[in-house]
Figure 1: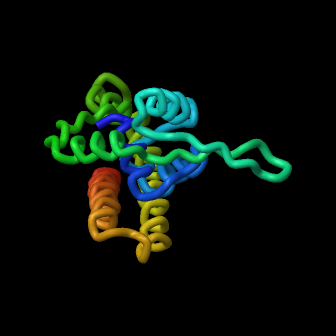
Figure 2: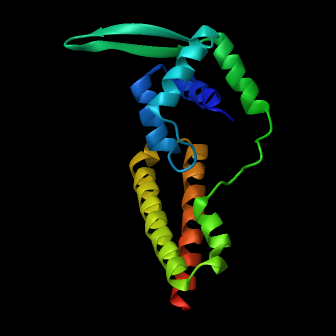
Length: 169
């Protein structure tokens, strides 16, 4: 999976501006895939050169022109080919887990602080995703809803485990 595949998926639903694509990442993907404007816009430019998408500039009163991107037949074919490939093996890169793994090399207070901070952050992530799911529920397909629910399950398991460790001390 790469950002190009994700953008093609977004555009397969309907045309979007770069801003709308970024918003889609924030609303729907933030718990498992992140992309900045600095990644999105160069990718859109590359995809346009590859004829995977087209760009239409729309004039706006008192604002800069709005660029709206539409997927092409070639882009749709590439996106469908991506969907037919097996899912890549997930790779988790976590600074938290690395600190925790080497926790015996530091003092207990430092690890307790690490755990408490992780608990606060993960709870905030859970709350944010839960709120998004409630707001978007009627707009989501069954698979999109399942995706968000699985994210909540992961967050909840992490939270419960850290809470049990902190309570047992």
